[in-house]
Image (tube, rainbow over all chains, first blue to last red):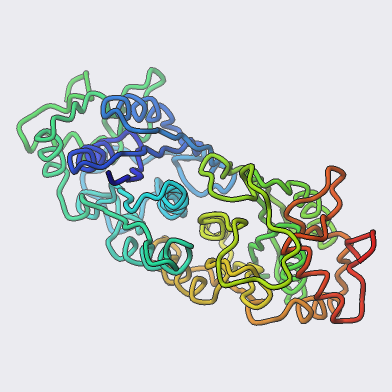
Length: 226
Length: 226
């Protein structure tokens, strides 16, 4: 049976991607990061999700990106709130190099495991304009992986799947619900309350609440009024 | 003044590269990794070297690659010894994704610092055949960085310099000596003795001993017979 490394933040997108890989029959290896994110509570969600899919292994790696700085997700900078629409400008929640770093570590693990596939929940529709979520980034990473690894030189570089790339948030949720995903397990908020509840005001909360609303549903991850 | 992030293992190559960046007038930021390498003693060398060049900052990041496995440098696998010539096969000292991971973190730091330049000691002449030391890898990484970062999207992606790429080991040493580098400060051995002395038998030791020998010198980093 074929193995896949799945980047798993514990959020809505990566959970859906794990559901997709699981449904396609992969033996899944979940990979999460404790990178100094203010929403470290997402790792508890990642563990719940990993358990719910009975992944083969779930690795939480420590890579302290606070030491490199440059983001409101890792520094003491205010996360943008209540944005009705997202301007072209990349918001301060952008973490320099994040998906490059995460995919690089996924690639290394895939190479060791002999996994031919990597899954990432990158999405370029309902997103905050992060450059490392776009299809041209995934293509460029794929080429770099081909020339920069032993697996690549030997002609069997892992393939990076980004199955959500062209879907809207409501399409992603619809697909996940069809796969039987329980979104109560997930956490997407960038700036949760001290008790771990989502703020319902950051870009990430707004995107998912709107996605559920478009399907005539309330976000099951949010217990207060929406 | 212009800033540069310099990947600094504490070995002969990265030390020479720091010397080159320093001589070119960059404000240098040294970046090293505690990645579970058996030759963690190299980090003491990196600190000595960073101090000798009075770098602006020297960051040692923890990224435990032992958890991903796949290399004799991080696992309990015998490091190859006494190899007179290196066959085409990539040796087990290859660490999956190492330079991809290290460059990704250097890129993130450069982006935060506003550094326009990154230096790496990759070399494709006297090397062990690692795919992530070849010019095609550096080019592919550069392109990926251009499309995967905010800096890249804004047209000012950091440039990855690999000034040793086409030099033989003796040419690298010659250049470093011209720059006044004291190679006694450096450590290159993959599999040092318990007291930190180089084994003089791994590929890395053999390459540098031969490099000095070609210049009619003894390796100043080795105190026993050569």
